[in-house]
Amino acid sequence: MNLRGRICDVLARLRIHNPDCEHCNARATCGSELLKRLEEVNWRAAKTDEIFESKADRETKLSA
Image (cartoon, rainbow, N blue to C red; front, side, top):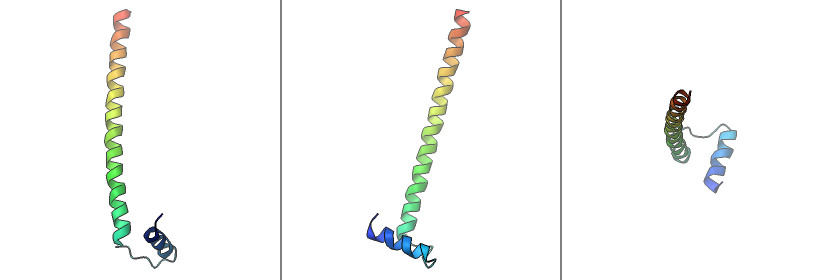
């Protein structure tokens, strides 16, 4: 953690930290962008699982 992060942490613990802090808001924005990307990747992975499951079901029906 860099110096600015430590300062924000100390101020937040003392409950005198500005809620409009540019440093903290930049980290929050980065975190929300990361969360959106993870949700997108998770959605794609779920779709891929559905495709493989449907192929396996078709193969099971053909072999029966």
